Amino acid sequence: MSKQKLEEGRPADCTGRVPEEIACYDLLDGIGVHYQRVDHPAAFTMEACQAVDEILPATICKNLFLCNQQKTKFYLLLMAGQKRFQTKALSKALGIARLSFAPAEQMQELLGVTPGSVTVLGLMNDRENKVQLVVDREIAESAAVGVHPCINTSSLVVKTGDLLEKFLPAVAHAPIMVNLQTE
Image 1 (cartoon, rainbow, N blue to C red):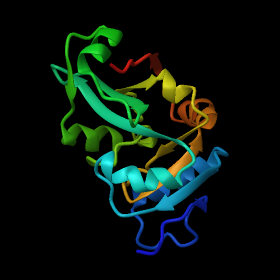
Image 2 (image 1 turned 120 degrees about the vertical axis):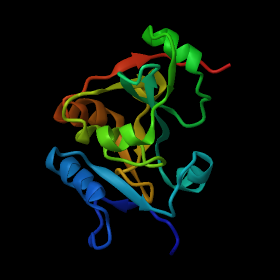
Image 3 (image 1 turned 90 degrees about the vertical axis):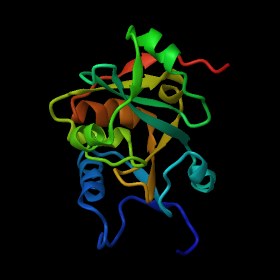
């Protein structure tokens, strides 16, 4: 692959791109959300995203797909990539006895993504609002965020205001804001 660089908007040629990725571009373009894009090798972990992080002028989101113990309630947590996830603290903030990582099958069914590609943009596939978005205030207060377009071979920079004020209303999801502390 050639040197990774930041591009404006969708790729000029979408040949070889998965339909889920193209659907993200269609939605963002349709609701007037400006974004920049960088294509890169598949990134399955935050560590693998480090080279991409240096290119993106944004706070990189850690996206965690979680559920309650009974697997009847699902949550998508957006938090800053460098923060350590503490299950106990989030469970307490949400008033839930115990949270755990949700199964990949539910991720695919509800968000239309596979492990390593979890993204807030996947909420466009949750038309029945079965997934509750939870956003750490650090993310909400950042100028821009880095997210995947439902595939982990591209990353987008989106203004946080556009994400909260244009994208979320367009997909009919309202976030719960939490303050996640680091120890």
